Structure formats: C-alpha cells, structure tokens
Image (cartoon, rainbow, N blue to C red; front, side, top):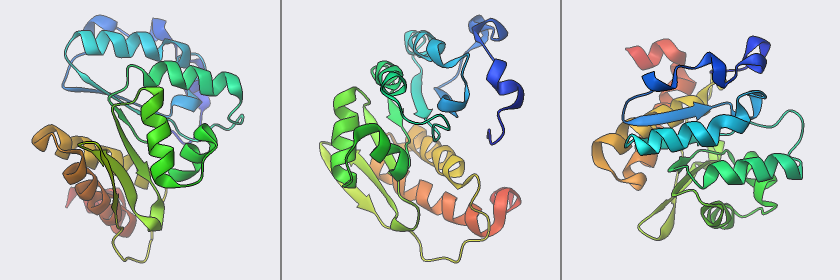
Length: 190
C-alpha cells in the first residue's frame, strides 16, 4: 500500500525484471502515485496478458488532479485491464458522472472487463453477466479506514480466482474490507 510517494516517485521500468513477472493476477495499486512507471503500465499489463495473467488496477486518487492527459493515460491502460477498482470519488472524477451504475458503464466503455466501484459505507457496485449489482456494506463502526480499499481489492481478487464470479468476489471483498476496518491488518491475519 502506498500512502507516501517517497522513492515510489522514481520507480521505473528499468527497476523491474520483466522476465520474472508471473502468477495468476498482475495487480497494480497506486497508479497515480507512480509518476515514472505509469506510462509503462500498459506495456507491463500486455506482457502479463501474454503470459495468461489477469490484470487488475487500482488508480488511487490523483494528487495532481484528474486532468485530461491523466484520464487519457488511464483509458489506454483500461483497454488491457481485466478488473478495475476505483472508489466512488475516483470514478466520478474519471467519468464526470455521479450515479454509480452509470460510472461503471462508462468505465466498461473505456475498456475494463470488470469494474468494482468502492463506495465506502454505501457498499460497492460490480458488473456481472451483463448487469450491474449493488452490494450493500456491512453495518459497522469503522476503526481503521486507511487501506480498506486495498483490503477490498485483495479480497475480491482472492475470491475471483476461486470462483470466477465478480458478484461473489464483490460480496467477499466487502466482508474483508469490513473486517479490516474493524480490526486493521492484524485482524485479517487472525
């Protein structure tokens, strides 16, 4: 999880050993915090897809603002992204839309195969078999919110690998995020 850019700002393609990338899913979080690597994410995702991997992306809020250039960069990457994990504010900024189901439709038009839109206490939305579903959040009193979106992403990807079902993955991801919000990272490990 990246919350402070530090040296991540300088991370670039030359820092990676592309021949060592393997697995079932290639996930990139903090897209907007990876200034020097961001333009190469498309290349990295294409490599992963050529190796039979699913690609997933969490954009992170753009601290420099969602300018047209940044949105165009993201659109290129979405064309090779299987699962996209924006939160509501990110989805709204990217699409210029407010209604969650419309945001998902627009992001699907940009190229993502699956969009799981994280809406905090309002749950999440996901597309499954041509429809968009709302998955309600669990009623809890939050304690740790920083990193909840990352916990959601991890839960979603785990269940999606098991079931291949985005709706079930979204339900599971909501539970994982809720547990994280209640107990923090150590709570996920118990």
